[in-house]
Amino acid sequence: MNLVRTLCISALILFTSSCATRQVQTLASLPLPDHQGGNCCWQALQQLEISYGKEHYKLTGALARTGEGVTLVLFDPFGRRLLSIHKKGEKLDTYRSPELPEGLPERFLLASSMLVWWPSADWQQTLAAEGPWRVDNTADERVLRNGEMKIIRVSYSPGSSTVVDGMSGNTVNEGAVVLQHEYQALTIKIITQRIDMLAPVTVSSGSFDREASSTSVDLSKRESK
Image (cartoon, rainbow, N blue to C red; front, top):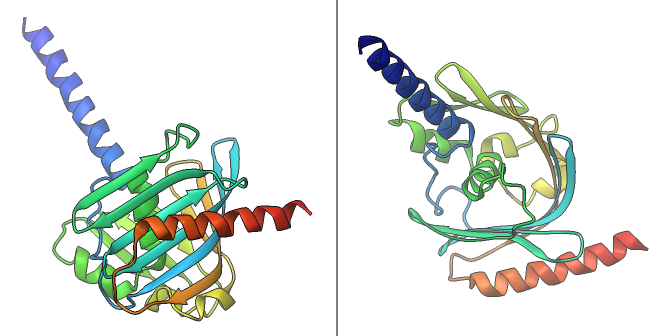
């Protein structure tokens, strides 16, 4: 009886530890900065090259930070929407296509985008009282850590102001940014093609989806020529 109890307790500990590790590695337990902050407000059109395991994806992304929240939309090369997620406060509204890999959760993709493009000061303020999470900066890198574990490394172009300031009008000229997961076979290369700086007013996420989709289709046509 004692052996059975010991085995059950051990299995429970392993299961709990596994769940906690997954929560960390998928960024599910990572607190996110507020949508309003140091460099609000803007919207950006981006090209993403995602390598996940043995699969490779080329997507168009549209990311916006406005007075009404954060919106991320991803499209395939034919302009079909694969993902849209809108965050305001702690509320998340999401759409996910079955074609998007299961190993790329919606919140993970949003958190990764915010990790890359939000000002360092926003992250420092958010994580100051949040236990093991922290973001360390060097001249051209950001590293997300949980305790001593390196979870994600973001590499910017040498001399990039985005490392400290986040998304700005200079980002288009600073080249590609590469996000590397330290525990999963996941790399995301991001090239920002256009940035529109916005006044802090309400922007309809529906109209943002439509504009981004239209631009995505145009880009696909140009690439196919």
